[in-house]
Image (cartoon, rainbow, N blue to C red):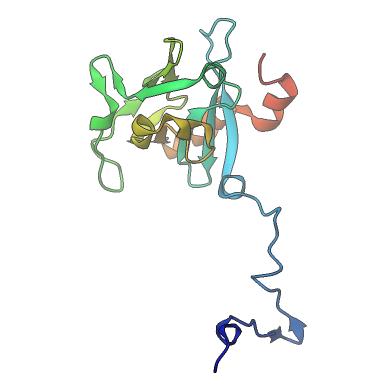
Length: 189
Protein backbone atom coordinates (compact mmCIF):
# COMPACT_ATOMS: atom_id res chain seq x y z
CA UNK A 1 0.00 0.00 0.00
CA UNK A 2 1.32 3.43 -0.90
CA UNK A 3 1.65 6.16 1.65
CA UNK A 4 0.36 9.65 1.13
CA UNK A 5 3.87 10.96 1.71
CA UNK A 6 4.95 9.19 -1.48
CA UNK A 7 3.01 11.84 -3.41
CA UNK A 8 4.56 14.87 -1.67
CA UNK A 9 6.78 17.09 -3.73
CA UNK A 10 10.46 16.58 -3.06
CA UNK A 11 12.65 19.29 -4.39
CA UNK A 12 15.71 18.16 -6.30
CA UNK A 13 19.05 19.75 -5.57
CA UNK A 14 20.17 21.66 -8.64
CA UNK A 15 23.66 22.77 -9.45
CA UNK A 16 24.51 25.45 -11.99
CA UNK A 17 28.22 25.83 -12.74
CA UNK A 18 28.94 23.85 -9.59
CA UNK A 19 26.91 26.20 -7.35
CA UNK A 20 23.73 25.21 -5.56
CA UNK A 21 20.64 27.01 -6.87
CA UNK A 22 18.56 28.58 -4.11
CA UNK A 23 15.33 26.81 -3.32
CA UNK A 24 12.19 28.67 -4.30
CA UNK A 25 10.29 26.88 -1.56
CA UNK A 26 12.54 27.21 1.48
CA UNK A 27 14.80 30.15 0.69
CA UNK A 28 12.02 32.70 0.21
CA UNK A 29 13.11 36.22 1.12
CA UNK A 30 10.46 37.74 3.38
CA UNK A 31 12.01 41.18 2.86
CA UNK A 32 11.44 41.08 -0.88
CA UNK A 33 10.24 44.53 -2.03
CA UNK A 34 6.66 44.87 -3.19
CA UNK A 35 5.70 45.51 -6.81
CA UNK A 36 5.18 49.18 -5.97
CA UNK A 37 8.64 49.43 -4.40
CA UNK A 38 10.30 47.70 -7.35
CA UNK A 39 8.65 49.43 -10.30
CA UNK A 40 7.32 52.80 -9.14
CA UNK A 41 8.82 55.96 -7.68
CA UNK A 42 6.73 57.74 -5.06
CA UNK A 43 6.03 61.44 -5.40
CA UNK A 44 3.65 63.61 -3.40
CA UNK A 45 1.43 66.55 -4.30
CA UNK A 46 0.24 69.12 -1.79
CA UNK A 47 -2.97 70.94 -2.62
CA UNK A 48 -2.18 74.65 -2.40
CA UNK A 49 -5.78 75.64 -1.62
CA UNK A 50 -6.05 73.22 1.29
CA UNK A 51 -6.71 74.73 4.69
CA UNK A 52 -5.29 73.21 7.86
CA UNK A 53 -6.33 69.69 6.83
CA UNK A 54 -3.87 67.35 5.17
CA UNK A 55 -5.11 66.67 1.64
CA UNK A 56 -1.87 65.32 0.19
CA UNK A 57 -1.94 63.06 -2.85
CA UNK A 58 0.39 60.18 -3.72
CA UNK A 59 1.59 59.80 -7.30
CA UNK A 60 3.34 56.57 -8.29
CA UNK A 61 5.39 57.12 -11.45
CA UNK A 62 6.59 54.16 -13.51
CA UNK A 63 9.70 54.31 -15.70
CA UNK A 64 7.43 54.35 -18.77
CA UNK A 65 5.92 57.64 -17.36
CA UNK A 66 2.54 56.13 -16.46
CA UNK A 67 1.26 57.80 -13.28
CA UNK A 68 -1.03 56.23 -10.67
CA UNK A 69 -2.83 58.92 -8.67
CA UNK A 70 -4.11 58.16 -5.17
CA UNK A 71 -4.29 59.54 -1.66
CA UNK A 72 -1.24 59.87 0.55
CA UNK A 73 -1.41 57.70 3.71
CA UNK A 74 -1.54 60.91 5.76
CA UNK A 75 -4.68 62.23 3.99
CA UNK A 76 -7.39 63.40 6.40
CA UNK A 77 -10.00 61.18 4.70
CA UNK A 78 -8.36 58.05 6.13
CA UNK A 79 -8.66 59.40 9.68
CA UNK A 80 -12.33 60.26 9.17
CA UNK A 81 -13.19 57.01 7.39
CA UNK A 82 -14.01 56.76 3.69
CA UNK A 83 -17.63 56.02 2.89
CA UNK A 84 -17.73 56.33 -0.91
CA UNK A 85 -15.83 57.35 -4.04
CA UNK A 86 -17.66 59.01 -6.94
CA UNK A 87 -16.26 59.75 -10.39
CA UNK A 88 -19.16 62.00 -11.42
CA UNK A 89 -17.64 65.48 -11.13
CA UNK A 90 -20.48 67.93 -11.73
CA UNK A 91 -21.06 67.87 -15.49
CA UNK A 92 -18.33 65.29 -16.23
CA UNK A 93 -18.41 61.59 -15.43
CA UNK A 94 -14.82 60.36 -15.50
CA UNK A 95 -16.04 56.78 -15.98
CA UNK A 96 -17.15 57.75 -19.51
CA UNK A 97 -13.50 58.20 -20.52
CA UNK A 98 -12.68 55.87 -23.41
CA UNK A 99 -9.27 55.93 -25.03
CA UNK A 100 -7.76 53.74 -27.70
CA UNK A 101 -4.60 53.32 -29.69
CA UNK A 102 -1.01 54.19 -29.12
CA UNK A 103 -1.67 57.93 -28.82
CA UNK A 104 -4.67 57.31 -26.50
CA UNK A 105 -7.23 58.96 -28.78
CA UNK A 106 -10.39 60.05 -27.03
CA UNK A 107 -8.80 60.31 -23.59
CA UNK A 108 -9.80 63.25 -21.41
CA UNK A 109 -7.10 65.89 -20.98
CA UNK A 110 -6.18 66.70 -17.39
CA UNK A 111 -4.46 69.58 -15.62
CA UNK A 112 -2.92 69.25 -12.13
CA UNK A 113 -6.00 70.88 -10.57
CA UNK A 114 -8.56 68.84 -12.56
CA UNK A 115 -10.89 66.88 -10.30
CA UNK A 116 -10.86 63.14 -10.99
CA UNK A 117 -13.07 61.88 -8.15
CA UNK A 118 -14.85 62.94 -5.00
CA UNK A 119 -14.30 61.05 -1.75
CA UNK A 120 -17.11 61.21 0.81
CA UNK A 121 -16.19 60.51 4.43
CA UNK A 122 -18.39 58.91 7.08
CA UNK A 123 -19.02 62.33 8.66
CA UNK A 124 -20.31 63.70 5.33
CA UNK A 125 -17.30 65.82 4.37
CA UNK A 126 -16.17 65.59 0.77
CA UNK A 127 -12.68 65.87 -0.67
CA UNK A 128 -11.76 66.28 -4.32
CA UNK A 129 -9.05 64.04 -5.67
CA UNK A 130 -7.18 66.00 -8.31
CA UNK A 131 -5.09 64.72 -11.21
CA UNK A 132 -1.82 66.25 -9.88
CA UNK A 133 -0.23 65.96 -13.34
CA UNK A 134 -0.82 67.34 -16.83
CA UNK A 135 -1.67 64.53 -19.21
CA UNK A 136 -4.34 62.19 -20.50
CA UNK A 137 -6.71 60.17 -18.34
CA UNK A 138 -6.21 56.53 -19.26
CA UNK A 139 -8.64 54.95 -16.77
CA UNK A 140 -10.27 55.35 -13.39
CA UNK A 141 -10.42 52.61 -10.76
CA UNK A 142 -14.12 51.73 -10.76
CA UNK A 143 -13.54 49.05 -8.10
CA UNK A 144 -13.36 51.88 -5.56
CA UNK A 145 -17.07 52.55 -6.03
CA UNK A 146 -17.93 49.08 -4.71
CA UNK A 147 -15.07 48.82 -2.20
CA UNK A 148 -13.74 52.23 -1.03
CA UNK A 149 -11.48 50.43 1.46
CA UNK A 150 -9.13 49.63 -1.43
CA UNK A 151 -7.97 53.26 -1.32
CA UNK A 152 -5.83 52.45 1.71
CA UNK A 153 -3.87 49.77 -0.19
CA UNK A 154 -0.91 51.20 -2.05
CA UNK A 155 -1.01 49.98 -5.63
CA UNK A 156 -4.60 48.71 -5.49
CA UNK A 157 -5.80 52.03 -4.11
CA UNK A 158 -5.08 54.15 -7.15
CA UNK A 159 -7.88 56.47 -8.23
CA UNK A 160 -6.76 57.16 -11.78
CA UNK A 161 -4.08 56.29 -14.30
CA UNK A 162 -2.68 59.27 -16.18
CA UNK A 163 -0.21 59.46 -19.04
CA UNK A 164 1.78 62.70 -19.37
CA UNK A 165 3.44 63.71 -22.62
CA UNK A 166 7.05 62.60 -23.01
CA UNK A 167 8.32 66.17 -23.13
CA UNK A 168 6.48 67.04 -19.88
CA UNK A 169 7.60 64.02 -17.83
CA UNK A 170 10.69 65.64 -16.28
CA UNK A 171 8.88 68.92 -15.61
CA UNK A 172 6.12 67.01 -13.81
CA UNK A 173 8.62 65.18 -11.60
CA UNK A 174 10.25 68.49 -10.67
CA UNK A 175 6.88 70.00 -9.74
CA UNK A 176 6.12 67.16 -7.30
CA UNK A 177 7.66 66.44 -3.91
CA UNK A 178 10.02 63.45 -3.71
CA UNK A 179 9.48 60.80 -1.04
CA UNK A 180 12.64 61.77 0.86
CA UNK A 181 11.73 65.46 0.94
CA UNK A 182 8.13 64.69 1.90
CA UNK A 183 9.24 62.56 4.86
CA UNK A 184 11.83 65.12 5.96
CA UNK A 185 9.23 67.91 5.89
CA UNK A 186 6.81 65.80 7.87
CA UNK A 187 3.72 64.36 6.22
CA UNK A 188 1.27 66.58 8.07
CA UNK A 189 2.82 70.02 7.37
